[in-house]
Image (tube, rainbow over all chains, first blue to last red; front, side, top):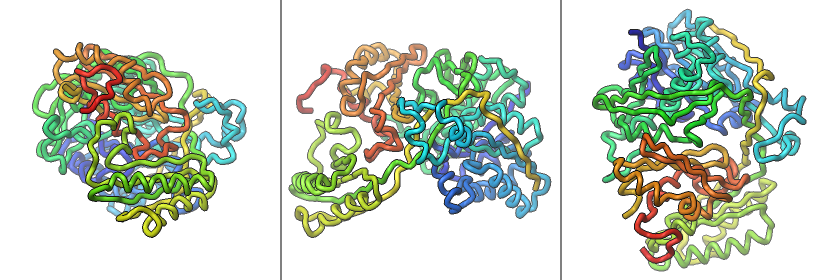
Length: 445
Length: 109
């Protein structure tokens, strides 16, 4: 019986490169998929494109492609990635250039566009309300990006067009994997249970190392072997959608029921209704079975008719944030840190920041005071002050007040670190699917 | 006994939502976990973070459940001033719930 193998080459923009090379060399893959776009990454990419700081595609695109293109070309492994970010066509041109420089000719690279809906929103602002209830007009002047989450269909179309490499902008993460499964098996666009199972497979793979023991280890409770050499997962998928997940023998990490369970529920709200552009997937009937060392069979993903609108992520400029940290250690460290915070509170109150926050790193900065109420007094503690301002000067005032604690604050403060930056806030809205027009352009090396 | 002895957890985020899964190591303990981790108990533990009761979803066949925490609208991952703006460290907090202590316990240790 036919089966195909899909590997997870990256789980976020900055992910390690060497695990993907190992997959390409040793896993006998048919597809290598790189998921590299976090919610905010697209806005940052658009901003750098607008500022002409770079071409608007993923900053690691050249490095990743250089590392895997030859191997993938010789082994006939197709590459699929959202590394196109804010400029898939430029990413395709760059990839073709890299292929030529590696002596690879005839590599066909597809660029999928159409996710950028900012022009449409600007011309139809009355149709859009942000998820928090605000009209889009309230942020439109400050908006720098608006991208709809495309699904698997344009990926399928690019593969039908003979693409060896498919580069996209915003596409829902699991859809990067669903597209090749539809292509290989000819599943119909409304075979909801197949698309639900394909989405389950894509969801498990999309964070790469998070399926194979990354973000999992808790010494003494959940031990993971050779975490420093974590291997990334791949799935072998049969025509009926049944799937076996593995990692390359000899790589670090582990793949078992527990690692799959954590990833199954990762970022999932209602497990019976996981909305993607392809299907509303239902994970409540999923079965996970360990069939060998680092080998897990996953079945039972189901689905219902896809939503008629697409999620749109809108990025807009939203003021500035200034932050400073300073540490105190030894006897009385906590009291001196608390005194530092009371000084900062008074100083920052005088300039009327929009919002401030003060934390004691080592005591309550992660979980807040209530959840941290049983924490013992630490030997050393780090004060963190952060404030939101409408101007960069306001943010810099926070920076200066933390630095001023050296000579004006409690005894024994040290190790100041500061930053002041513009905030890009992401909000979501939705757009009817029929407002979207996708296009596919091809580059050939 | 802490929840950590009976279950594991991973946290994810979507906008101003945080998802926290709880997965039983052993199916025999799942019922007890369900009884302790009520919507009321978990909402109370995360009272500083959420602005309304948590949602709870149970996957009985997988001995797991998941909670959705709603942060105020201005406290999503891209806007929160918190050190851990994603809220990714919160899964470790749910594992610190003491199964033998009642809801809202304020004592020492």
